[in-house]
Each structure stands twice: as C-alpha cells, then as structure tokens.
Length: 101
Image 1 (cartoon, helix red, strand yellow):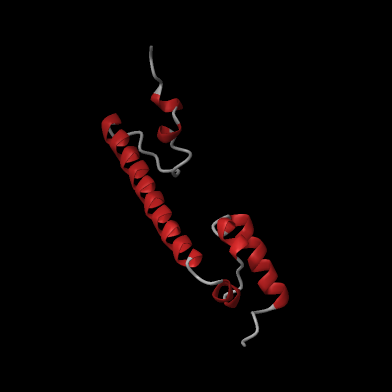
Image 2 (cartoon, helix red, strand yellow; image 1 turned 30 degrees about the vertical axis):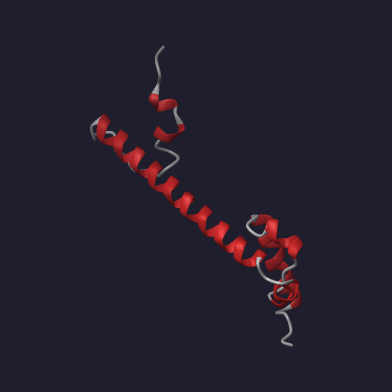
C-alpha cells in the first residue's frame, strides 16, 4: 500500500497559505506542517477549556443574573454557536442595549 502525502489535507499547500516551499527539503516541509497542525490543535484544546469554564460560570448564575446580562438558561447550550451569536448581535443592533434597572 502506498500513501500519497500530497493528497492529504494537512500537506496541501493551498489550505494553509500560498507560500511556495517547494525548494525546502520534504522533511522540513513535513515538520513545518505538523508543527502548524499541532499548534492549531493546541489552540482548539485551549478554547474548549475556556468554553467549558465560561459555561460552568454562567450555569452557576441565577435566572435573575442571567436575565441581567440578556440571557436565559435556555440560551446557554447554544452560547458558543456562531449562528446564535449572529442572531443575538442582530437583535442588539435592532433593539439597542438592555435598559438599566
């Protein structure tokens, strides 16, 4: 069985930038791509940890505290969904900020 590394997504030059590294040794390009992939993976792990911590803090709030920042308990599972965030931002632009009590 033979593996064609050029066909694997991680090795395709189009996805991670338009730099031309064809003159670099194959092993150097391989390690550079693996390093980039590892850094992106580490960033995703860090972001996931921050999301879990934020979710836990919001979940610990009372319904009144959540309402004070413009959320309901039903909003929490979708809080990190990009579509939900766009909807919330559109509502804020349409209706303005939450009135101060």
